[in-house]
Image 1 (cartoon, one colour):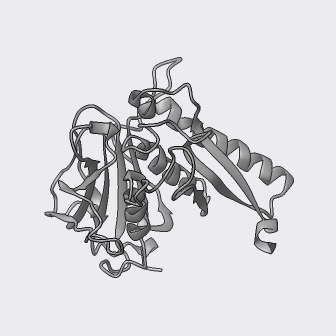
Image 2: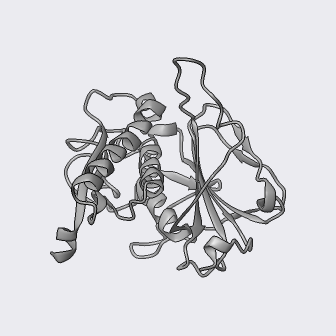
Length: 268
């Protein structure tokens, strides 16, 4: 109770029941609303209660239980990962997600307790992404808009120190996660000290013929399924040789761990 009194919780939903098609989940204007909301909340808290920290709670892709065949599909993962990335960039270190199993369609598991896409996404995030946020500069994205026009990028890139709890990677490793909302493949070439390092790829795409409506996920081309009621599958990365360009397929999500880079900010 003392912790809750010291901290400030805020709820956030992206959309309401007027959103009825998968394309609505890919709108950059929609994804950008969260950053605007967080900025307003942080400004109010800083003015009226600067000693309090802000938590983001009650998070889901849609209010009132979500939308059937949308909020529980692969498409909703773009909003969920965008939430995690933007919250971290604003210094919010606690994000509360509902729910494992409840009414509506914002679930993390289905009626048989099989993990849905957002569960696998959350599991990878927890295993690979540490709390320390790193600045990202992407040539070609930081461009000046024409007068009266806002640039809303469909390629969203975030970087953190790799989680210290993941013993597959030594301290100093970096995890980059990318959202590609384009309907075409996009190539990303690492530069500077990242250029000549081995990269582990964890690429998430929908599995099956339903595309973005799919409730199943594939990791690096292999479907993700529970081994049994208590055993997760091994989340195997694909190794990209040093200097290789990262190729993001259309409307996909990827985590990329740059190994053994010995980044100073990530060694502490």
